[in-house]
Image (cartoon, rainbow, N blue to C red; front, top):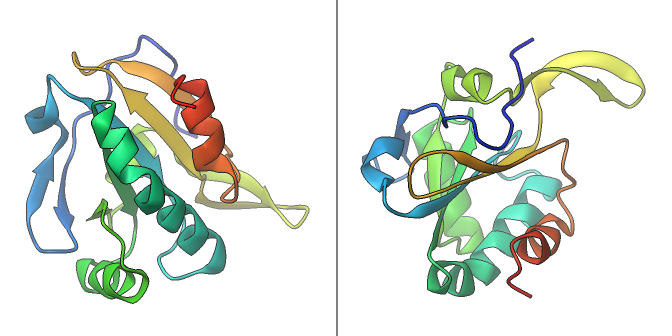
Amino acid sequence: MTDRLAPGDVAPDFTLTSDTGDEVRLADLRGRKVIVYFYPAAMTPGCTKQACDFTDSLDSLRGAGYEVLGISKDKPAKLAKFRERDALTLTLLSDEDLAAHRAYGAFGEKKLYGKVVEGVIRSTFVIDEEGKVELAQYNVKATGHVAKLRRDLGLD
């Protein structure tokens, strides 16, 4: 299993394709605070709830200086359908080979319905302006996570 990141670690860089076909590089966002969250699959109930919660909070998060990137292993075309279906306004990125997931410790063994399986670990990271991890949260819940994150960041 990949080691988990902790506050103070340098956030692993990545270049991923968005739902619009653009390449997004984490390094290009230096100087800004970035929330990176990993979710198992577009258009599933929990992931939809989480993405909608981020979309609902996006204006206030951006107002506080945060950019939000949602990453899954879905292909860009599926992410585009997800965006359109649910009127999502955050940036959705495709990590089909799971390289970014693994670099962040967001893929590995987890418990699912009492069984140990290998898969995406729903995780959220806050990266500061210098590219360091400010907050690393693993095994987060889809429902209520954005509200908790806002509290953790002192935004509520």
